[in-house]
Length: 610
Ligand SMILES: [Fe+2]
Image (cartoon, rainbow, N blue to C red; front, side, top):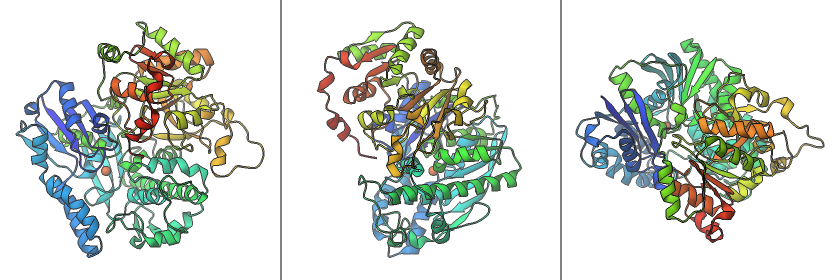
């Protein structure tokens, strides 16, 4: 037996993954345990969980891999600092303690994290090798082109190459400071959202605006080549030498200082969001065409933070040049932990890779699960009133009925998701046909910005009826945005609305999941990957005729997705959620003895706004 532990840490989204004889046994993000979103600390809890899941002790591990090369990264930091010195001294000082105490002493840090019980080898591939490995090795392709699009690792910010059998080869790199990830993050910052977490919001905001700054961005900020590579004019940016992403010159170009976080959104931010989204798509499409020309292969594997831009993913799939695309669901740095473990097994140890008809990501349900016995013990200890269903069909009937009557359901089943999206294991579910659900869920349940769209889950066999997607199109990881089918849209009368007013109209027969530009971030649900969720959706379909529901992550704003029964129950009680389903147990809010005693503000205050 060969057991390989992969770790990513000290940047954002620390995580651990365990691969035993080539099988992914467990993978989890540290934030789910520590309840600190994007936790970057050494992933002690995630490692402990992975070992427990496999029944292994640290001394039984054969290899431990870290997802990038700390010395090379440090070299980049030093060289960048020297190039800009004396500017940048403050940001240099800010970064130093973590480097001097932890990042430059990784074997010591890892050894400590494993209680000094691991004495064997450490593996340090490059950042982008880890991303590329996480994209190709679990994919359903025997050979494929590979594209990684990211913020930055050591020096590379984007790479391309190919994977064949058990090997990946990266042939081209784009280097820091020129970076699509950092460019997108600069606009995220400028529009008043948090870097490394607000990128998703910027993408969601884009359809409210007009892409009126595209030419300005292309003229002033970046010089984009045919092959998708580009150079940025660094006088507009400040991330090499400063503590902010953009410079004063950037602000002058776009009509004033950055938006203050939490202040009202104006047309400028919406237009900037629309513009940088458009430019991102142009860069991604050129890169895709380039790697297609280079490799002549028909499939593509994708990872790195920019691979979470599901709008550009959807466009790439619709417009080619690739026949099929597989995207690592944990495309950000968490996925690097999985990447380094698989890289060690296949590429370094030379073990063969068998490709099945589906990917080997196992629906990305790779984290902790809780038995009915554990749930029961918890519920009894806290005095919660519950109903127990020993029959799965009866449970699904009951919950489907509740959803159809506009109840909002906290749904916790099986193993937690690995990656940033809730895929039906730790989800909040609701009726997509409801006109009021979008605002109810945003403002009363999740306590987040009203403009943010919700994503649908749809029965796989009916996906093409509701969305402009192929009959056979799978999107089990919610990484593709597709237009809602014409037949399901509702025609709009009168003058077109502007800005956030666009939210007022019902745009389709499933308004709660139809974004203002008629798009939706689709997750297909099939019986193989999501057994119980599929059954629930079938029950809902029988009652209502509708194969679509809302699926959003089980958390409030700023909170990591819930993991344990305790997290789920706390979130349920502190919000306006109506029903909590954990395994075979159902809790109704109005039946809970202390339903009114859980102050929402206090609960929200624990989590930093993201
Ligand atoms: Fe990365």
